[in-house]
Image 1 (tube, rainbow, N blue to C red):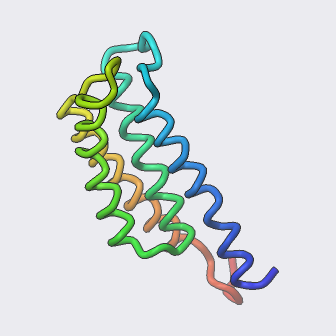
Image 2: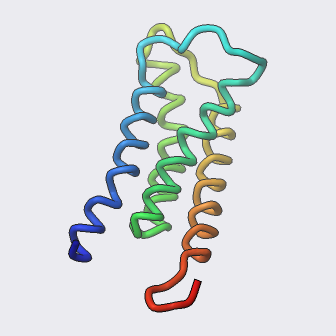
Length: 122
């Protein structure tokens, strides 16, 4: 497979993660009862970490990816609070989102630095 074809396919997990994130954040109602207190904060963290992680692994530029998702965090809470009648906004969800962005970027950097380069011994 050519470099361009490989890059195109490497974007698929990032696209899937963004679509999953949008579904979680903008579903008309919440997912129901949580298995433990503050479970939703864990979900928020994960749905922001995964798109960052996979986008950076797909070699998208890290700074714009982080910027877009960092801006999306408060915007999504504002939309939930004002436009989705069965949802509410929570400032602590924004904090969890931003923690997720940070963790996703850190995990992606770690994974990229751990990858062997072509031609190197493993």
